[in-house]
Image (cartoon, rainbow, N blue to C red; front, side):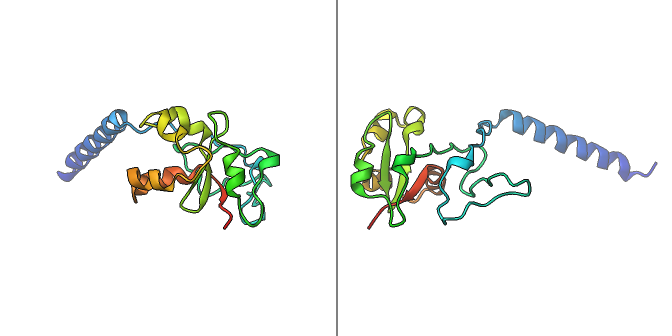
Length: 157
């Protein structure tokens, strides 16, 4: 037996056990189930499909991230964007839309999950929440990425 072989095996065992312990103690939540994207409107106007012909998952949906609620068919965004008056009709716990930095987000499913409490989200339902979001989260890349999972369209200009 070569003298370096036992050292190599020992190192692999230590790394493997360390990785296992790290993964067990890590606070990463389980991945969220993937949404049925066949009912979501395609932002580019074209629905993409995978090799099986099924609707492809939009790139903004990542495992472990909340999945956005799809808007009702009567509330679908128009080509020019979602108007402020349309956003204003979604100002409740049952349907909470907010405009943040020029995009419209359906935050309904995020209300009970928001770490800062439900009131923070309920306070921006039906209106422009840019000031409150930017004031609290600024340019925090993780918060911006999390928010992107709720995007349903662009605000009309």
